[in-house]
Length: 461
Image 1 (cartoon, rainbow, N blue to C red):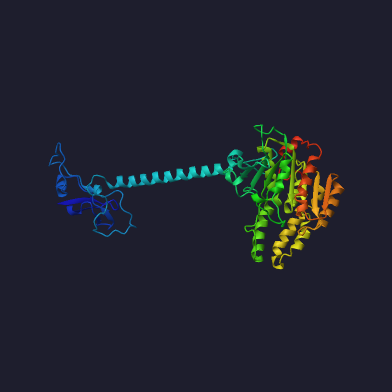
Image 2: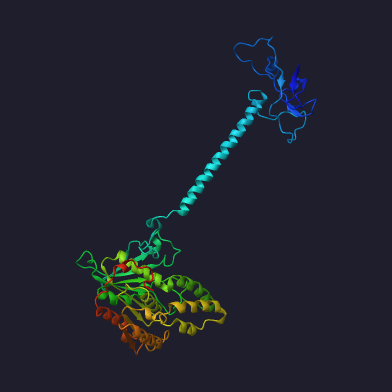
């Protein structure tokens, strides 16, 4: 039995054997590859071994329409060998789905997939742009801004009570900014710690609002160019004179502490010192830590009078206190015990190896902007200076000269010079006792203008 085929390319007609049904063949006229249709004839159904469908059977004598070639032939670029079997789905082989329907279905699937991918890309781009340009609320950031768009103020966690020293009448609390997940550790002072010393209550449930004086005390040590962690518990005696006088003490760490307590290898010391200095300088030489401590007191300690907040420091902590006093007009006063007041002279005394010229240049630039000797004319609050003649780290002559310069622009300066070492048992903590008495005898609390309630970091420059 033969099948008549009409070529869609040259419109010629020819016949092929019925065994070629559903296969590719070449036109005898133009030699183009075409596919032979399967004729809808009972004989073909029997040839394919397909079961006869139930219902009225078509007449045997019904005319048979000639098979036509596929109106959508394969492109000539596709290498198809003549006479090879047609490798498509069985449904097409059986004639249930023609090739045109299959091609349309493929286009529909591809179009749907491309549409889905396009929509996903469009939505993703929209979400990214929304997050890029939107202004998130401060509470979601874990930080707040002042009304004058000043620097960030962290979210302070609640104080955790660490211990009570009954014979001293002191309650000690701890605050770690890292425990508040709303804060960012990457900002200067973002991971600092505070320790609060509070006069213990006996009969009252809590201190009356605005009834206490507060003293901020930064950590300090013999080196002015890096920060220090909180002092260990066994070295807390210097804080008790203030608490015994009914004051609140807020001791805080400064950024850029050295990772080791002792260095046997000087090379490692200078390597670590340079890395620590960069963190210390990023925190404005500890002033950013002091600012956070000030904001903590104003937010979390309602018993402290906002006009009676002092800052006091020893050694490099005294330098931090003087620097912050030059930047913060809200302070009631500043106390500096044996401070480092001239950074430039101290750089020369430290005898930094010549190979560290880059580090020396960084220190000199820092000293030119942050040394108390440079900021002397900006310190307007009352100042108490204490030094000993035998001090080995910072010569008393520097503080004596600094005091004279400070008095030229500030009439409220007291300089106390002790002939013996302050560590002498006969003078145990005499510098702190003198400082406490100076605070008690100080003038009335500072009257803060409303503009100072939201003053930016560093105060008035």
